[in-house]
Image 1 (cartoon, rainbow, N blue to C red):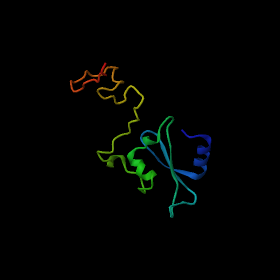
Image 2: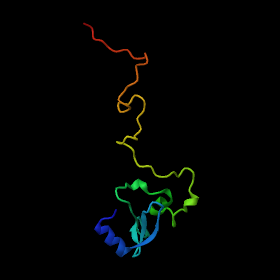
Image 3: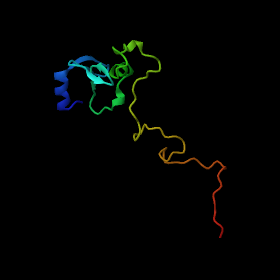
Length: 122
């Protein structure tokens, strides 16, 4: 979700290149190219959906956004390893909790017999 400054800048200096299947809008600057590392290239940006983190950009747009591609990849040309985005689940009920984790139903597995507790000499 864009703030007022981003919306004004986008309206004044950007042209809509496309949208992804989730509704994020991708823009490219219409004015003079910015000099970045000695390369003249237009500025590119995305307007995220409300509450989204930057990792939500799908693979077909990621390469275009980072100037690796001149045009975004067509969705039908996605590779099998280009999986849909899954938000970070840390801190939620869906987070990974391996066996033995204190967060895994609050139970620890019983000792396996390979542990011998230390007892101080009296």
